[in-house]
Image 1 (cartoon, rainbow, N blue to C red):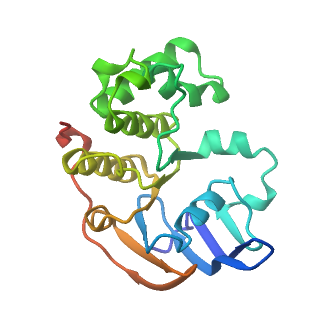
Image 2 (spheres, one colour):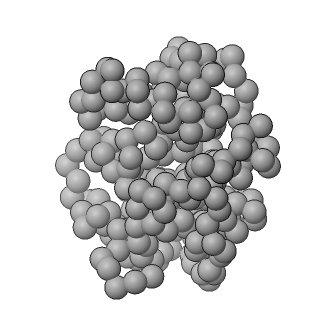
Length: 240
């Protein structure tokens, strides 16, 4: 980490459910810079998804504060607009719209930003090309594999060029080769576009591809570890 203002700042984050009887997060604090790829690791139920949900304005903490790009999330008045401009999501399950083609799914986030139809199509097709799905652009999700659906979800998350990308088990439906290629694409987005990528994962190989690892246990941060260097750039991606 350098002395530059952090892109993400988390201070004393706490979240409890079921009238306070279930502790999901307890005093979680960390900072992250643009260009980092952070792996959130830990067992199921440790708080990884809860943390991503709060960072993405899908949930609110009971205590603590979060800033993205100097903007405190508690003060954001239009969360959906903020998400469209600044945050890309890759969920554990792809959440593609089943009645839309892959191209239309990838193009959809640009509508909120007022991008014209021709430009939406151009950028959507370019992103599908990057994830190896150009030939599937006109297909519905029912006609592609689970791995292809998840790769389309990655393309959708990147298409607005967000500053922060939140990914919850993004390679869970992919084989090893495609999983590594998707992680390389996310890492390249951090390195070349200056984005921050936060990935929740159980996969030790995916965690090892991050630049930093944050472990969660029972909603707390017992340790942090530095991982290895980033994987290859998009020009070296290979999809099965």
